[in-house]
Length: 119
Image (cartoon, rainbow, N blue to C red; front, side, top):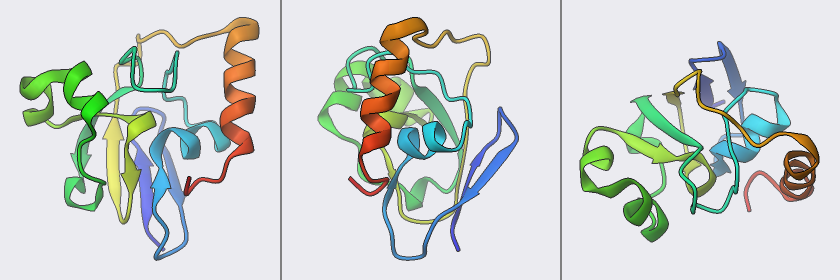
């Protein structure tokens, strides 16, 4: 089974071979700690550094290109909410990055958890 290694939180999560899973949704389901605010590619809060396995990620989407820019993309950064894993990958993030909290954070988390990892 392929594995997503959430390096900053020390979590390794396996997913079924042949699936394409969203990095943020898997993090939310498994309490891996990736910070997020909008979960739609607009804020950039869920920016992660791909430490290994970039070849196992979905192509960069327009929102990622607009939010991150070519320099950060070239340095290996991606947005979790816009990125899907197809195989083994390891990602890390700034542990001081602040996530959305309170009622707004819980509502967004619930909405994301209602979907499938492969959406």
